[in-house]
Length: 265
Image 1 (cartoon, helix red, strand yellow):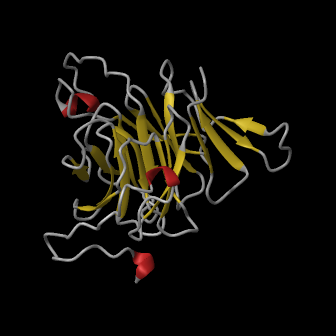
Image 2 (cartoon, helix red, strand yellow):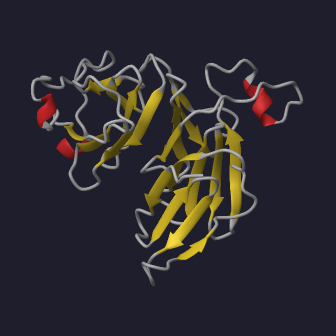
């Protein structure tokens, strides 16, 4: 099974996690050509399903999360070499009750294969966002309250979400792009749309820059094109969208003002 997810540990650059049919970690610190390879733990909770997302915890170096196309989310503790939490992400299109995921013996329909996306909150090491390309909503989960999501964003998109990214410079900002060809920045705490970029496509991979505040790399898998978006607000920086206009910040109904990201304060 091909590798569909890769991520370097943001704090321990020698560790590269990958996901295909299982999660593997390579330590390239000693020998780049023949890196040490190990698993985060046993058993493989994703067996039989392709892993589509890998995310290192931003605050705890030895915590890693993985997600597979059947909606399975697993949190691994590398120090203990085992999983410390796993569940199956429900969606708004499920035909059975949410509680069935937590041990109910009721008859269930097999989850539809979907490309899962997930990433940890950069400031709160117990929270992560989960989305998938078959559902227009995305959820924020907290390991302290695992019975249900602590927040659900239902009205941001109208089609399945292709990619999601949490801003490392301002953890109030969650970026998402979907099959509705919209790329939107939302306020994690209020649920309000902060800004929508003037794009006419959905991006399969989004990544905020950790050094250049407000800069975002956005990739289309079908074409391989990579664009650079800028939250300033300014228009998209790539020449192909030079006529797309400017991204105008949304006015918050609660404050009557546009949101100012932390790096501008």
